Image (cartoon, rainbow, N blue to C red):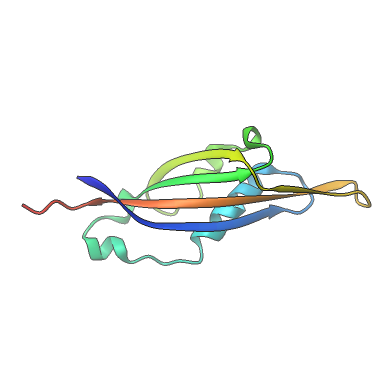
Length: 116
């Protein structure tokens, strides 16, 4: 079977006060995924759990993201998480804390059925 790119989903996530990079990344992936209900797997005659999802997170501190936690957000299938420098941090001097913003892109692949 050959993987076929089905959809690219994008999202934004934040951690308002905790400067928790994993929380912002998870929220960004949820934002990307939770606004969709894709019926394409059924149309293609494949199981939704066969989905492969390539997740890219743009965040100010990529090495501070717990990738397995982000990957656990996927409702179906499995995949890989890559974190790159991006997103945004906003200091709030009055509160003496930071807001972290993360961007997520999730590229969903399904195995293309090979009819003989």
